[in-house]
Image 1 (spheres, rainbow, N blue to C red):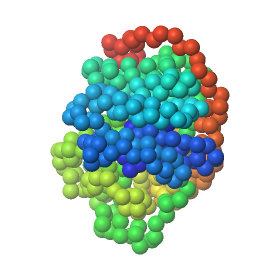
Image 2 (cartoon, rainbow, N blue to C red):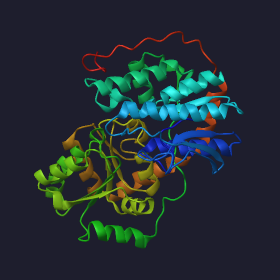
Image 3 (cartoon, rainbow, N blue to C red):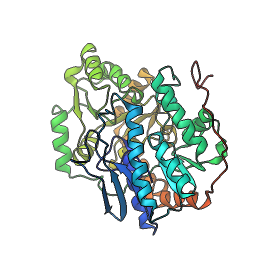
Image 4 (spheres, rainbow, N blue to C red):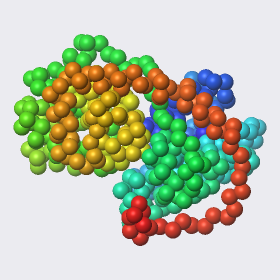
Length: 413
C-alpha cells in the first residue's frame, strides 16, 4: 500500500482508513507493507528512512529529500518529490520481494504507485477517497485544481481495479473520470469497536467546561474546510440561541478556514458562545461528544463521513447533511436527522427537533450505534478488499493522453 498519510502522520480520515485496513488485512493472515512518509518539513538527518514492523504491518517510512519544498505552497512539486522518494525506497524493496498487488490511496501517490506496479508486473488497485472537483463543488478554475484533477483522472484510468467508500463516490468517480460504474467496488469505511466509552465524571467535566450553565450544547468535529459546511452551522447559531437561550457550540478541529470561522462568529455576535478548541486528543473528543445534546455534521461535500460513525459509536444524537456518503450512513428519522447541504434554516429546524424531544433523539442514537457492528466492521471490510485484490488482473490500458478539463462546472459540463 502507498499512502501519504499513516499514523502518526495523519491529516484526515485517509490515514486512519489505511491504518485500520492494513492491520485487519494482517490479522487475516496477509502480508502487508505500507509505503508512507515522515512529517512534512523534516529531512533525512532528523527523520531518516525507517523500516519497522508495527502492529504486524511492515511500515517503510520514507525520508524527505533535501529540497526546500513546502506542502502548503508547492503542493505539486512537494508531491512529486515525495513520489521520487517512495519510488527509490520501493525499488529497493522490490529487489528482494514481490507483492501480489499494489494499492494506491488517493492522487498524491499516483506516480510511485503506477511505477512500482509496472516494475513489479502486478495489478494496481486504487481507492479514490475524494475528488478535487467534489471538494470545489465542480469548479476546476485554478491551475492547481486542474493539476490535481488530472492526476486523479490518470490514477482512475490507469488502475486495474477501483474502490470507493460510498455509492455516491462511485457515481462521482465514474462521471468525472469516464470509467464504468460497474467496474468500481464500493467498500465502506469502518470503525473500531473499542475506545468510545468514557466515565460519567469525564462527560460531566466536559459539559461543565464547555457549558457550565446547563443550556443546550451543540458540537461539530472534523476538518475546518469550506466543504465541511461549518459556516452554515455558525449561521444557524443566532436563531438557535433565540429559541434556546444560552445554547453553546463547540467546534473541534483544524483547517484553513479556522480564522475565517472566528471572524464569522464575531460578525454574527456569537463569538462568546463558541468554543474553538482545535484538535482534541481522542479521550477529550469522546467526552465532548458524549456531553453534547446534539452533534451536527453540516457538510457541503462528504465522500463518506466517518465522523457520523464516530458520533454513533459514542451514542450522540446526530443531525447531518445528505452530502455524498452521509446520505448512506444516516437514515433520516431512524439513526439521525438529515438536512439538505447548505440549508441553514434546515439546520435550525432539525437541531430544535432534537432538543425538543430528547427521548426520540436517544432512540435514534441507540439505533445508529446498533448498526455499526453489522455494517461497518473492519474485518468484513478487509475481507472485501482482499477479494478485490484476488480478482484484479493487469489490464492493457493503452496509452493515456491528458484529460479534458471542464471550462465551467465539471458536474454540469
